[in-house]
Image (cartoon, rainbow, N blue to C red; front, side, top):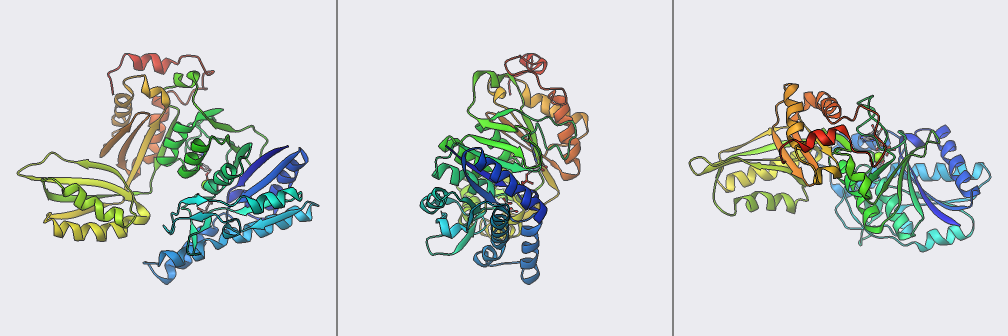
Amino acid sequence: MALIVQKYGGTSVGDTERMKNVARRCLAAQRAGNDVVVVVSAMSGETNRLLKLVAQITDRPDEREQDVVVATGEQVSIGLVAMAIQAQGGKATSFLGHQVRIVTDSTFSKARIKSIDAQPIRAALSKGHIVVVAGFQGVDDEGSVTTLGRGGSDTTAVAVAAALQADACEIYTDVDGVYTTDPNMVPAARKLDRITYEEMLELASVGAKVLQIRSVEFAMKYKVPLWVKSSFTSDPGTLVCEEDKSMEDVLVRGVAYDRNEAKITVCGVPDVPGIAAKIFGPLDEKHIVVDLIVQNPSRDGRTDLTFTVGKSDFVKAQEVVRQVARDIQATGIETDDNVAKVSIVGVGMRNHSGVAARMFTALSAEGINIQIISTSEIKVSCLVHSKYTELAVRALHTAFGLDQPLPPEGAATVSESAALKGEKV
Ligand code: ADP
Ligand code: ASP
Ligand code: MG
């Protein structure tokens, strides 16, 4: 008997009919001979609704109390899904995060899972129950409710799968797999049969919200076979897996975008050792994650330092940086939240040259100005004005041959041989 963890996102439990569909799918998996644990999200739009309620009370919410509010969406879903399973003749028990001891750190609104108690889940499974676990929420050492960041139910599912050493973790959503780019933005996007953990990690980190980044980290670390599938079709979906030789043939596996960043420039910073630490240290103390960073060459002993933070941290980051700018006697700060990050990702980049150059050419052909560039071994990101997001994504999708049907794995691509003639990144 196999143990499967299935996760259903907000759209998949968006109304009671859809919850009945989820119940049917869980029962079918159980009838096929599996133990089934199902992790569910809040009904679509519910987490946003709860966050709006918070915003109507205050624009500086206490993060502990905010988590108390936003974690409630999942409580409704697990109860309803458990009852939908029972109404169809099955046995089901629901559990909130604290009831299966999903213990996290105390970083409210983006807490990290430390451990899970598999025992209550195993006990219910052994009685033939389908176990329904609330996604997105946990509890810290003090017993306070925490949440795992937007999209956090994916992470709950993979962490539960890792704790139970499940045979598979299946993420059911509103698209039938991982695509070359967001299929809701680019109709020419193509579904991938397989993607490596590393590529998925990079795509998730640069904005492809189909999987939360932490879920991919967990899957990679604990070698959980991770599937992305549709809750509305029987398509086999996409397998996120270890890399093998044939997967290096594709230069760029996917294109992603992220409109959730904002840019801060500290102007006229004295160009002396220790200044970067003085700026980024206080941001780190406030748990503000900094993404892209660029420092201009200094002129007359002063330089400009630009970086991006998540939009949800933008107000907090400006307050911190304004204070630091005064302390270090910088001339001022400038801010801009009309920015978007567009990125290309592929393990093939490791062995092939010319990828970044081709990206810049494609963007410039559309008249798109690049504000910041950042690269890793298998990724190139560019920050652009947000009004160009869709144009940039489409241009890159075309430039890297992703509009065409994907070649069978193992076959060298035209784009690869062209790139081999290019210059090194
Ligand atoms: P859920 O509510 O099921 O967790 P999400 O909205 O979080 O679903 O994630 C699914 C969405 O991710 C899709 O509807 C799609 O618009 C978006 N998406 C972005 N990039 C990709 C990609 N490369 N492949 C598939 N979906 C993507
Ligand atoms: N309900 C949470 C959110 O909307 C968690 C999730 O859906 O994964 O972000
Ligand atoms: Mg999601």
